[in-house]
Image (cartoon, rainbow, N blue to C red; front, side):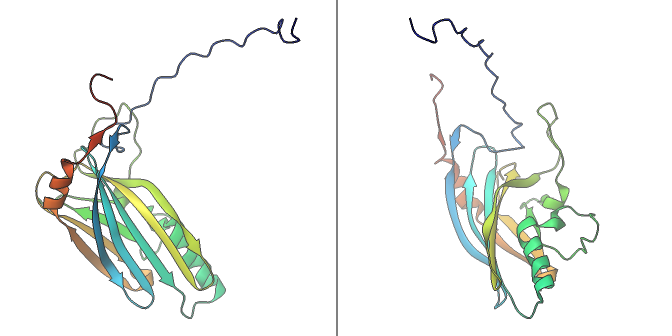
Amino acid sequence: MSFFDDVPAPPQRPRMPRHVPPVWAAPPSDELPAVVSVGRFLQRTPRLVMAVKSVEVFTTGCLIEVVWTVRRGGETDAQWAAVTEQCFNRPSFRRGAKDDGDGGLRFGVGYADGRKATLDGMRPWGPEETAPEVPVLMPAGGGGGSGSDEELSSSGKWWLWPLPSDGDLRVVAQWPDRGMDESSVLISGTALTAAGGEIRKYWDGND
């Protein structure tokens, strides 16, 4: 007889249903996106480089990846600490927060038909919430990076919904505190449409 023979089996835990967020709130979890390489600079100066790296295209929207590096100039340690906070945590995304100063890093996306979405417009959501009437842009990963007393590097990915059906996308950035005026790059609508044909589902309808 084993020592464990008389130990009661643990109760069976009920299976938790899979949470499926609204289509506008996150990329589909069962798709392998097509990647469109962009590789275009939003800013390129001795103190700041920022670029749109790529776009991951899903059937419902896309993930836009932006990278940036800041070099230190004559900032004191306290000033450089503030730059570090802004670079990694991007407090200006929470517009209206105390002492945000309106000079922090901002992002937005414009559609060819005139609609636009910004990170300033982030809003809470839940599975029962109805779809917004305006495009949505929200954080979706990224934000990692590295920092030292001389240089900071970071990145961000943002989910954009819906996927444009026609025309180019314009990615817009502004960072007044780092001397960056409003700047933008165009992402080819033709390339996004072509990428839509390369999206792959994880499972077909029979699985």
